[in-house]
Length: 146
Length: 146
DNA sequence: ACGACTTGTAATATAACACATTACAAGTAA
DNA sequence: TTACTTGTAATGTGTTATATTACAAGTCGT
Image 1 (tube, chains in turn brown, blue, purple, yellow):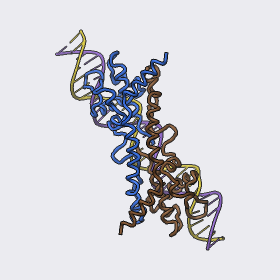
Image 2 (cartoon, chains in turn yellow, purple, green, brown):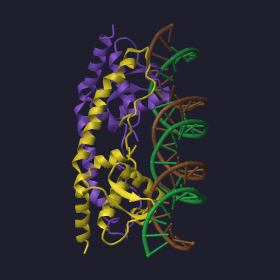
Image 3 (cartoon, chains in turn cyan, red, brown, orange):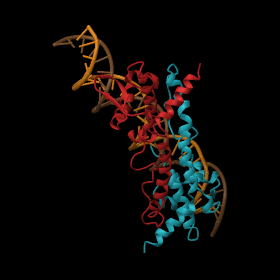
Image 4 (cartoon, helix red, strand yellow):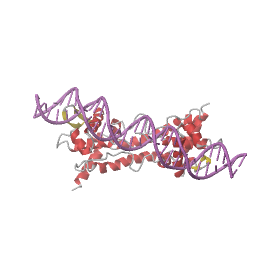
């Protein structure tokens, strides 16, 4: 299993919106070209980012822009915006443990707290990383290309 | 996306093997009853746990047993045994970023280290939790049932 | 040694989900 | 008003997870 590529696509999108903001209108068509994905995918991702207050767009009006500074957008914000992991959690618990077995009827409760701690660790690390980190790293790599 | 239920099934299996070890032979049929899944699923999970040196079985001979103490089996060991996340990592990076775009050809490298840190955080927490924790919690819950 | 039972594994079916694609309504701006 | 864009619904396609059937190979009690 893997976290959906919509996550890395979203980071790519935000990076492009910042990187190209002075050069040109950053349309879904343009982003689709850079990301290498269908423009509709781009638009649905942007739609989620917009709902989360991360980017600004308006129907008919061409181009997207950022709603807040890069250092105030964390990986966690994007992960949440895209609902990468839903309310049932990171782990898929088997659905039918047998309630007539003592282990079967208690194992879920016995594990839940531990599974939540693992998910929390992952999310805590995601909160530490901002789009400012990604954009500055990307810009450095571009400058180093020669 | 979610981590496969084979993970929680494996924890359930190890817990049962320990819990019922004095009462009865813990066969794949019996485990299938407690877990609420097909015996073949149980056997394939056990096959991985065996390859990882966590349980002991032998063909024809009925029942499974543990290959090492519960406090030496971590969630990480089981997660690795079942190959819950393969070598391409926790995140699915979009496949076709455009190499003719400066952002497109650098975003992958710019993100990789950060994505690895997130996965490492998750795995570090998995190493902290042992099956001894789960079994003792499960036993306490069974005793508290009355 | 035989029969009942179990493990181990291959092959296939089904359902769920991710991503791609087509289509089009609604809005904006020159 | 024309050309372009956003927003979104509907559908197609491929991949993966889990279930299931089937059967070879091994063990153990009798």
